[in-house]
Amino acid sequence: MVAFMNGEAWRLTLETGIMHYWSRSRRSLWKKGETSGHTQEVKELRVDCDQDCVVAASARSAARRATPGTAAASTGSWTGGAAR
Image (tube, rainbow, N blue to C red; front, side):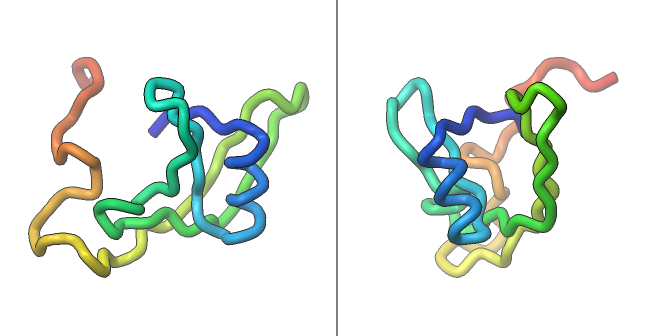
């Protein structure tokens, strides 16, 4: 998954241990899994040498509110290009 984080999303991620992102299209913060229940629990965060990119290792938590058999993605479908 590739997503954008602003300063507040970064701060919330560090404080809570749950991945938070900034939605550029909605212009709002979002906690991954807030709707589906499949949160991303932070396992490791790595920042590159120019400090403009983060790689996060996370574990998906079990859904607390999701319907059994639903996907972790918001739509449940692949939205990327062809797999290579």
